[in-house]
Length: 202
Image (tube, rainbow, N blue to C red; front, side, top):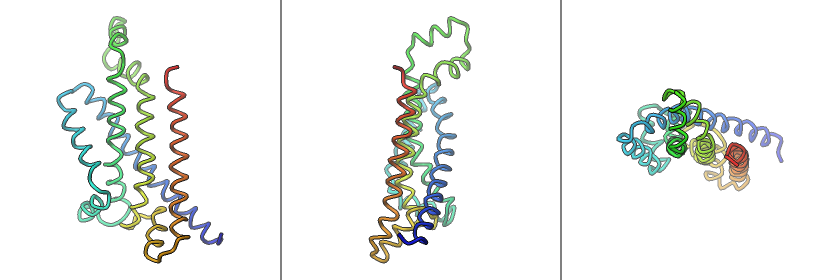
């Protein structure tokens, strides 16, 4: 492998990881409290989940194009779009985990004199952790793949190789972008799945 190509792969892989990391951090910061609120407000669930479902159905390039006039070309637009895609699995899985806590467990906690806040932090969220991690796993793997398209709006990442490969019909460039992205997604999936299994009840 050309040393300069190897250095570029490393640099763009780190840039790709940065895009994914920022996206998942923002999505989790928005999705987790949203799921907690939805668990307490059944009437709002249909509207919020409907919005996140709609965001999921919009093709990524179309969403990037829609956001460009408002945010501009570059990383910020990519992160905004990727965050919208990452919200649904985190919200849905967190909500499923909280609502899946056995009613008897909640009643026992109430009988012990725990407040609703204490039940949330000491009972519901700890029991929902495996489901939350599953949502984060799905969101992370999906974001790694979708982030390759961000290069089309100047956000960098491994998609730079794909853009170059398509423009120049260069198979080496295509592989230089696709293989590290695929390896990144597999490692993230395996790692988070391992954490999910460790946190799941025996």
